[in-house]
Image (cartoon, rainbow, N blue to C red; front, side, top):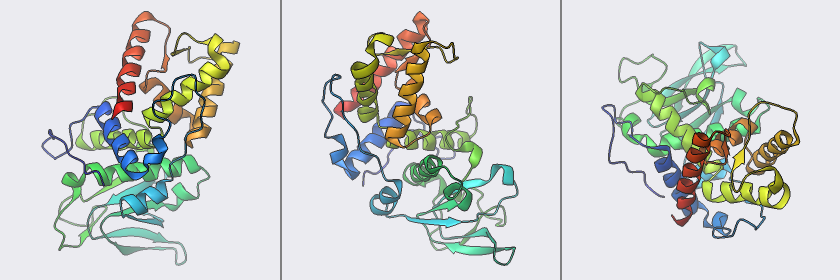
Length: 295
């Protein structure tokens, strides 16, 4: 396993990282786990290929040696339920017992990923996979924040007078949706876990050449050079619909939602507004993320 290390942390031990640092780490982890995923690295942009999909359950269980459990995690905010949790310590977690229509506490061992039943059975496999990889990101990157006394049993959800931050309890609204302005340590950790999940499911060394191969093979005439340039509004043009097709194909290929694919298209510099400044910034990002191919 590739251990996570960081030279800078905040006062609560949250790592101080750029998104490119997380992408580099995620890609090294993925290569260590399944190097055959990268057999297409080095191919030219004219080559069209089908990258393999990551199996989040296999990764969590075989690479992280983590247990994955599904429970009705108790929440006082059902409209924004706890979609998943990364459990670092031996602790008791409150869950809902549907059979008896009551709550109970279950003992959860360290290095466990809990998924809520609404996450697993809610009809969205892409959300389930992203949540699982989000929690894996917490387990890998945030040990220094959450790991406590191994001899003690902790309680979660405010029932224990001891340390508050003993596990990463991630609500539905925080999965895949980083806040615009990050302020608290939790904000930064959730953003880092989202970035890790996205880069594991859509690694730049596979994602960028796949998208460019579509453009080169099918729709080159609608775009400029190796960069998608499009408005995000529907102007009814064939260019817009070609763009939507690419988002759809890419999302399906990597097993993610269309919104997640669109975020990575922008982050990796494959999508920009047509203004000169935006195009320049997108090209800079594309060059930066392409540099990870050599890692």
